[in-house]
Amino acid sequence: MDRELFREQVRVERKNFSFELRENERGRFLRVTEDVGGWRDTIIIPASGLHSIRAILDHVITASEKAGPLSPSPPDAAYAS
Image (cartoon, rainbow, N blue to C red; front, side, top):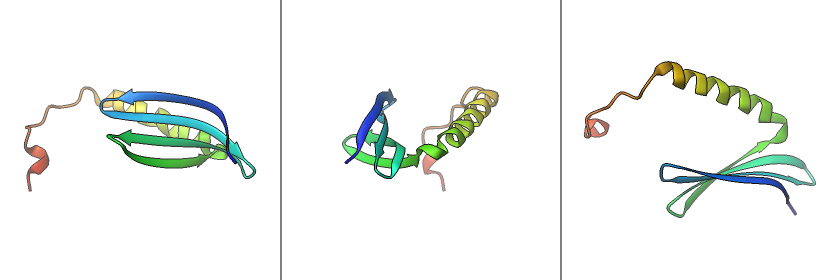
């Protein structure tokens, strides 16, 4: 049986994200769940990989900040073939 050690949730646009640090007999892990209108997707990250994931997220944040503001695109650009 899993034991919850920490939980935090955040809403980003129309998505809800839940971050749960849990442990069981096999070890600790982070469960990240995305909930969009009742549809859920979950990933499990072993605790041993959390520092690597944090380093990647730091790089992604830096790259996003360096890229500047998002360029507006025409409303039908996503449907262009």
